[in-house]
Length: 101
Image 1 (cartoon, rainbow, N blue to C red):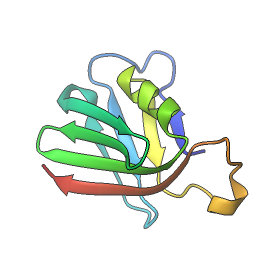
Image 2: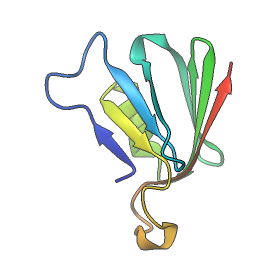
Image 3: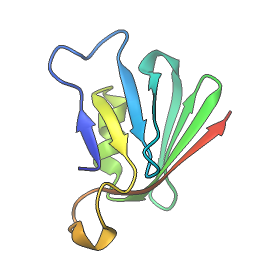
């Protein structure tokens, strides 16, 4: 699964969005630090946090974008499965780029 939603009752002030990288590294940021979200069908989702920029690239990411806007995403996973094993209609995250803003 490319991303998972927060469990019932976890949403609200203090919620965090986690990022799981292909290398096994994991980190998270609080939604309260999310300043701007941008969806570009060609480049993916850009999340501007206080002091951090996260770019999520892949396919079929519009549902993920809306869920981030609703602050319901608990974790985003880079390359959760082999690209060819994921149906074309499903979201697939090929890369999570993590930069200082």
